[in-house]
Length: 226
Ligand SMILES: Cc1ncc(C[n+]2csc(CCO)c2C)c(N)n1
Image (cartoon, rainbow, N blue to C red):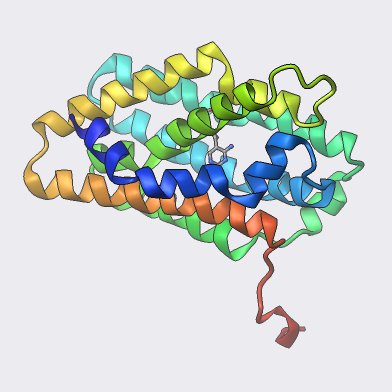
């Protein structure tokens, strides 16, 4: 099965994601608000690109049930997750104007651009493999954090952890894994290789996304522009 194989291939990178200082601090609740707010602002930008990639996957799906799944996920990416962002940014006192003034980070732009390019130029199986880590990695991190934070009352990032350790979210992860496995079964070897590459690249971007928030990443060249 494609998913099983690719998960095993990315095991070391997944461990690095779990062990990243951003996620370690997110889990023990010590992550500073500046870093989490930076992550939330960048994530809102990422989500609008991600939902468009899912909408493209829906348009491309010949199977009506797959088309519905991708369209629903495109909606969820904007609705549920956007709600999470708005409430955290409100809690942290980040106004819409302040949010709009933050430049999109190099990593966020790279990940969003990769998804958009894949949505435009690659066949559906490759697009499905490119959006899969977004679901799967977050569920993996969310459930690990849920276990690690059990019994910790008043955890500042509880709503975030709950979103990604939720049972309905786990069901959508199973669903997209099944769709991707089915698409891989009938894909030719070159497409299967492209699927594996897209999955690995997206998983690399997942690590980079957390790392860029940890470093509060900016454009090193900005200083030379007016
Ligand atoms: C960088 C980044 N990667 C993945 C997610 C998680 N995520 C975003 S949309 C979606 C599917 C529909 O809800 C999921 C699982 C995130 N928030 N930010």
